[in-house]
Length: 81
Image (cartoon, rainbow, N blue to C red; front, top):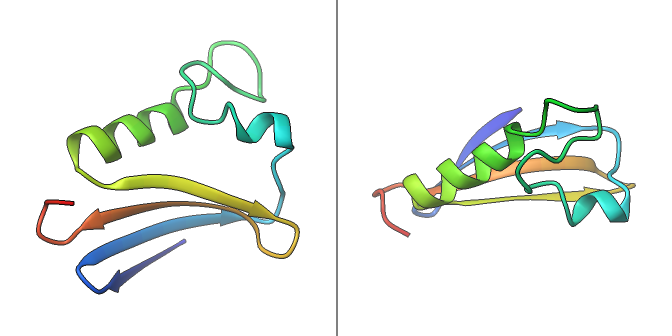
């Protein structure tokens, strides 16, 4: 986990050593998608919805063998993108 100010943005991220399969990468922000079973799948969907729609930021992730999976949110420091 981490937080960093970068130019006029605030970046926050969370890392995991595992990597996402290609078929999962395209679905990770979909409502009700989960690799853990039924009744789940709101976490990344909510993160994307709130982070981008309500806060005007950018939510995304990278997933590589070298770095694992990193989910991040970039928020404009002044509240505008």
